[in-house]
Every structure is written in structure tokens, then in C-alpha cells.
Image (cartoon, rainbow, N blue to C red; front, side, top):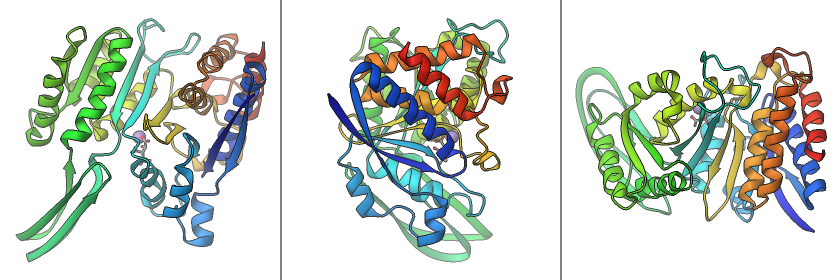
Length: 374
Ligand code: IPM
Ligand code: MN
């Protein structure tokens, strides 16, 4: 029997509640499909930071890099200034493991109510491939007050490094700036992944940009997309400005099959995507490095007000778990988990409050774990 070793970071807020259910369902799928999981728990998150001052150390990241997949609950806590945990743990891991693809399926399951009238599971079934390491997320920028100053900003990655030597002069009282950067290597690899995915689905790939205004960065993105499209003649492509695509997601979601997007626009449009597929409680995601360590998580946050209440919907996390075991090669077990989720939803007996039910987080986990085995 295969045994997978999977590190788990339950994290903050509702993280421990939902991840427990995800592990329960995967264990149950393992019993049915003949694999075992050894879960290795890591304490990183707000409590660990408050106790020890550590976010996540280089040593821990290095240790984690021996595994192919990490299971993550959620990160974020109101006791700590916004961004500290998110950048220090979540983004640190995405960058360290070079998880350059953020894969976010937007799929309306049978039995889920969508706020979009007259759209069915046939209409809402696409995948967003979000670039996950570059763009406005590289985390370099600064502030300068009136006068002259200078600043060196650096991005150091395995893929490449870049250094900005800035001489700043301003007569404004104070300026703030953030540098967004994409690279040829970084852009090509995520686009190649998206073209390959589209090739294996309905051969339809939409790119997102804002090349009409942010033309340096997204004009470059668009050129790379165009140049790669000539290598995939069977894939039908089009460009979408990010503002317009939010409109099309709502009006004509059936147009989309695979959508490839720069990091920040991807962050924004996938929250919208989550809503059209029934809400944040149902939206999973994978941070993927196809040759390295990937990390799977729900796309929602840590919902601190529901912490420890056994109240929130664990389905996004369970579904992210299904994506994780698919990545590990357990396709059949993964499909089975998604089917069990769908059955739980269509039967409508055991549902959390967000779906109009009264069941607790663990009841939904128990039910899906049971359905997986049937
Ligand atoms: C997401 C989240 C993160 C992001 C935050 C928590 C850093 O919003 O996974 O979508 O912006 O990528
Ligand atoms: Mn987000």
C-alpha cells in the first residue's frame, strides 16, 4: 500500500476546523482506494508567531521542500497587523517553493444555488490559472518624503534576480510606490501550463490584462500570450481587459474554459469566480509547482469570528484536498471525493449555514467521508 507523507498547516481562525474535515475525507478515500496518509502537523500561524516570534523559518521551508504536497487551512488573525502573516507565511511559501501556478476551478456543482439566474452547471465550468509569483506581489516598493533620496530594491529568485537602483526626487509632501514586475521566464511558464491545460479541455483560452493602461507590464504579458498562441494553433484564444472580464464572468460564464491571468487580477477575479460557483465556502485552490512542492488550500480566508465554532463550510478545503491527491496521482480517489461533495450537496440533508442548513463543519465532513466509501 502506498503511504503519502503530507505536511499540514491548519493555520489560523477556522483553519483547524476545516482542515480536520479535509483530512478525515482523504483518510476515508484512502481506505477505499488503497492508500494511507501520514499527516505531519506544523504549528505555523498567529499563535505560533505570538509565542515564538517566528513566521516560518528557512529551515522549516527547506524541510517542507522534501514533500510533494502541503495541505493548508487558512492564515490571518486580527491580533496581528494585516499582511504580516499573509506575507510572512503564505506568500513566503508560494515564493520559496516557486509555486508559479495558482489553479482555481470555477465550477458550479449540481445542487448548488448560484446567484446568477438561469445558469446551470453546464454554463459555469472553467479554470483560472493565476500566475502566483510575480506582478504587484513581488513585494517591493517604498515611500519618500519631499526632497531627494535613493533606494535599492531587489528580487532574488531561483529563476532570476532583478535589482532596481532608484534615485527619487519629489516635491510632493510624500509619495508611495509599489513596483510590479513580470519576467519572460515567469510569464512563459504559466502560459505554457495554461495552453496545455486548454489543449486537454475545450481548447479555449482567455487571457486577462490591462494593456490599454498599464501597457509596459501587461503589454508585455499580451505579447507573450500572442507569441505562444502560434505554438498551439488548435487552442482558440482571446484577450480580455480585467474590468471587462468581471462583467463577462457574470453575464456569460459559459464562454470560459481556461483563463490565464497575472497575479493581482487573478486574486480579484477568483473571488468573483467563487461567488458565481456558489460562494467562498465552495472554492478550492492549488498553489502548484509541477516539479516541486505544491500547496493546497481553500481560497477563502481565516474567518476569525467563526474560529472553533464548528460552523463554517468545509467543502472548499475538502475539494482542495481532492485537488491535492489528484496531484499525487490518485485521480480516481480525487474524482470520488468531488462526486461525494456533489452528492452531499444535492441530497441537501447535511449542510452548513451558508447553504441554508443547520449542520456543523464536522457533520458535513462526516457525511462526505461516508459518501466517499459508498
Ligand atoms: C488569496 C489571498 C492571498 C492573495 C492573500 C491572503 C495574501 O487573498 O489566496 O487569494 O492575495 O493571494
Ligand atoms: Mn484572494
